Length: 166
Image 1 (spheres, helix red, strand yellow):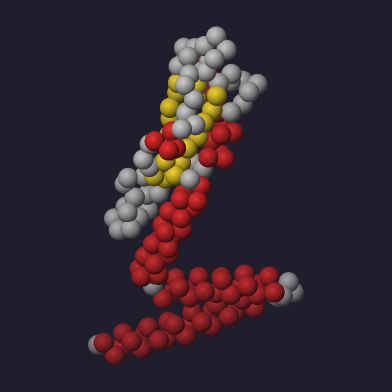
Image 2 (cartoon, rainbow, N blue to C red; image 1 turned 90 degrees about the vertical axis):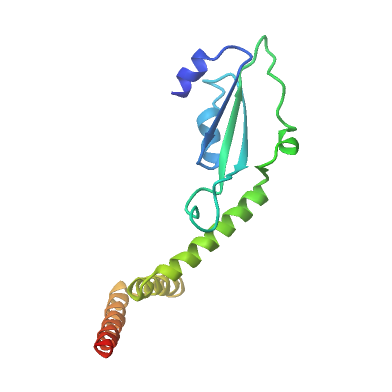
């Protein structure tokens, strides 16, 4: 598709497109000097739709890709000053900070909405990973046995709780 866009673009024109992928993934698709004779600039742009409640699963930022096709060996006006003049364009640090906030929000929401079995499963997996890094000889069979024991204890507690409610 990018080949076709490049083919029909007039010399001296500019392509502006957006992606949810990180810059390092996008740049590899557009910045191929052997195929495309254009100047590629990428920016991270803050999403106006993300928030920490209803839209918490949305992306916190988008990648804006700008491709300038030269005319007579000269490119259209450079966009290097765009970062300073356009609100919402993020530095790498600002983008990382927004993603950290979003990760924290999603983690808190997941903990709040998870049931005991899910939490138990996550805890066992985390303990297994810690144990594997500290003790490479640790067997997965031991973890499975521990998970079953914990799961059985939790099921007994839940049954007891249900009987007490009745």
